[in-house]
Structure formats: structure tokens, C-alpha cells
Image (cartoon, rainbow, N blue to C red):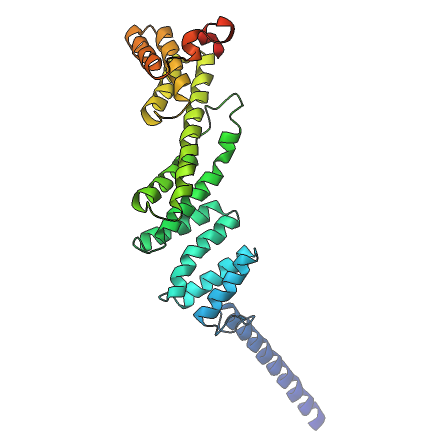
Length: 278
């Protein structure tokens, strides 16, 4: 009888212990999920701002952009008011740019400009923003030999131009100003050429109003671009087709004054009528 009582007590104790162990295990899992028990120790814990910055810079220079971004983010989170954090805000934009994350790079540059409009290096933020947009829209201009340009939007190219213009206007002595001006010249010519290609597309399809409007846009916004010559010729032809003699003659007069030796005025190669050049 005594043996039976002891066995019963042992079974009850075993069940109690099992329930206790299960509860303890559940508590550990819960604490781990809440972040109270770290699953893995952060190797950067305790690092100074200078060390975080140095390590991030090394990762950036080595082309490990994702690692650099993570370290820069930790630096800013742990030491948000130091000089290293401020520099990290700028360099993280560059890291995103090099990693091909254009939207994140632009957002980071915009954030720096908004938070530190008078910082000595804010000119670089404008330059980087322009550079990211410039690189993003090269595809449009490298494909100008195609046919249908009506559905292509050179928004990034325009935003690149605006960022570069802001840079050279506000910081004409910036170390980035010369390159920004060169890229602006390229963008003006490329954007004007894009508009002319669209206008030419509409001309071929008899959409004369659309063609005239795109050509007029070149005249109003890119008056120094080489593509202006063809834009004026398109305006002459489109207004003529629309039965608008005054607008046609005005456009032709501007064409004659600015391009007196224009192929469109001379009739084109082999005296082919200039409107047939499209």
C-alpha cells in the first residue's frame, strides 16, 4: 500500500514538473519575441560614433554598400546629434546611389537638404540628387533612334536639370559646379531632341496640333538647343497643314532669322521638299 502511494505521488510530481518546464519554455519564447532576450548579440554594441563611422566608411570604400548603409543607420540612431551622424546622413545617400537604389538615394539627399540647408556640404546633396536622376534617365536619350516617343516621360531628366541648376545658382564656386553645368548643357540638348522626336512622331501620323505644341515647347523652353531648327520647321509645316497662315509665317520668319542656311529652307538634300524630310 505504501509503495502505491509513493508511486502516485511520483506521477503527480512528474506531471507538475512537466507543466512547470513547459510554462518556463513558453515564457522564454515570449521574452525572446518581445526583444527582452536577444536572439543574437549585436557585434557593434558599445562601439563609439567614430568607430561606427570608420567601419561604415571602410565598407563603403570596399563596395559593400548594404553593410555601409546598416552601419550608417546604426550610427545615426545611437548618436543622432554628433558630427558623425550628420556626415552619415549625406554618405548614406551616396551608398544608396552606388547600390542602385535611386529612389532611396534621392530621398536621403532631399532629407539632408531639408534638415541642413546651410551646411557646407549641402552643395554635394544637390549634385548627388542631380546625378542620380541624370543616370536614371539616360535610357530615354540613348534610344532616340526609335519610332514611338509619345509615351516616354523624361521626368527624371528634368528633375536632374533642376537639381543642377539649383546647385550652380546657389553655389557657383562649388567644386561640383563645373560638372553640373556640363551636364545641364547635355540635358538641354537631349530634352529638346526628345521633344522634337515626339513632334516628328506626331507629324508622321497627321497629329498636327500635337506636333505644333511639342515643337513650340522647344522654342519656349530650349531656345539655345540645336534641335530648335527642326522644331521651327515642324511648326511651319504643322501650322500650314492646320490652315493657320499667320502662325505659319511667324514660325518661318523665326526660322529664317536664326537659321538662314537651314536645310529646311533650302529644300533639303537633292532639293527634296523640306516637309518630306520626316
